[in-house]
Image 1 (cartoon, rainbow, N blue to C red):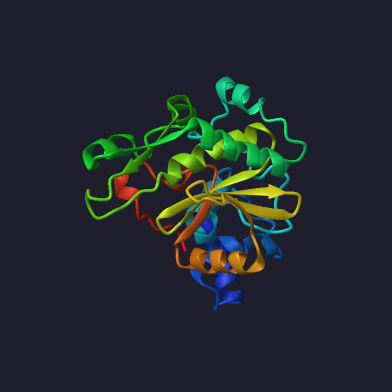
Image 2 (cartoon, rainbow, N blue to C red):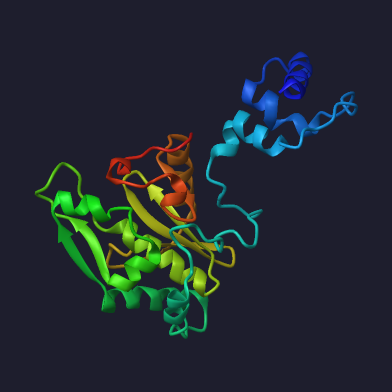
Length: 245
């Protein structure tokens, strides 16, 4: 910590107008002149994360400089099991977009939406992995007459779809916008949104949608990651969760 304080004090004298998070972590790599004699601690990455607000945001961003493997990384909720691989091998589409349409058809033909009471819904909401959801063939929904919240089953759909798309090598991201979840998947440089709660499940993402997501992200109402668990969503209390701004 003494090392970090010395670096922060030195940088404060140079750029007093910067907020403390950027002084301590965000801009330090650019300011090594005169500080080469100070050794970097082994836990630098951990310290950077603790002191930099930017580092706590979900790592995925829509842009040209996105890593090639972004979207293929599995989360604890979206582990691609042998069972998911077996189902994904049935999709024979020639292009990623055709495969995505086959994934939509798979859900339409093999899944049923089951409406549950509030007490029953709380036991399964955000408790199941992608493998559990696909094995059951059921999407959990909340009866509209129960409580003040309404769930369309969007999280179950999105988590399972992410796992199936990644099993076919298609970069897919679980997204949360307000109280609704969808899947963003990438075909070359074009993003598409998959919302299995709608009739027209796949639609290309235009510049207007990207600007909207950016605005909601600044408000803490939009986030994207490997799955819901990666965003810190684990129970019904996280239904209207807001994220790091």
